[in-house]
View (cartoon, rainbow, N blue to C red):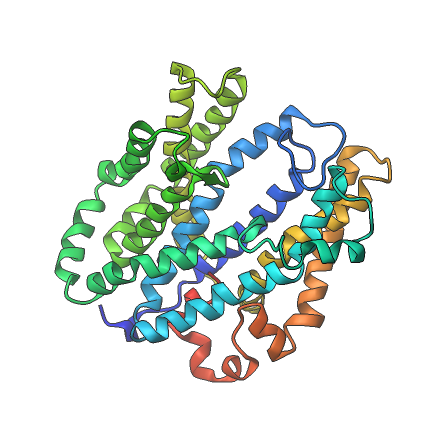
Length: 390
């Protein structure tokens, strides 16, 4: 494939932005679900728990698939040195900056709300530095694992983009078949069947074991490598989306009704199968919808695409801080949630606009390219920039 002929994938930009907004809404709802968190409402709601289970079926798989697609374009920009530098700047730097700065607020709120610390935030800082630094915790685990996966998969992806192009083309022809496309969940099912749930290999976050996200990155790369696969995804968009969302909703209901979630049972196995298949079909549905309807290039998209990574890095800390205070106001929970969501969104965007976007040092710390690069007309349409907001 001639890299010069590749046009920027605006659908991936739209989906990345919508995916991060979904993560933002999901995290705001965790104030009211059953699972423990840094800040919690006194009452939890079954409906919110169902929403959380439903959303996690496809939320992070979509993010990793989009990242895999971005890697396809990133590999067309140069050798390993350039690739590594890009991943360090876009993923590792904002991860480390977050761990050394605002993640201390998340840690403080956890200890304070769980009765582990009674002082104020500034009194807490000596406890956080240096022994309790949350290097890979919180919501930034996504950046860490994407960085690792990118390095692990580089040799394979580099070969597929070079000497393995014929193999990649033949593979694309096979994957473009409807049945094969939908059966790409088999590796996930095999992992659940062959590996003990208590094994370190099955350590999870965001609804799935980390190891499964590696396969989602591979799938994103493979999908993007072949126009035949993308056309099939586009044609099947409604079938995939409706089927995927229905299965994901069915999983949420069935799993929530399963009293014993530690012992393998027929109901639990069916629920897991529904989640895996429903999650993948939902991702295919979203990708197909993006290819069909989200192709417009607008100034708002340019702004949002640049803001995605800083928004993601900041969002959970701001949500927790705002939620901590709003939950003390004694308002109806629905109103609390709306106020928390609105204040957090405005706060995040204000920090981005006035403290991050305009200053090259802050842009560097948040994984953004310097302002001078965006001023260059050639960079505005560079296809490889699809990877800049991973």
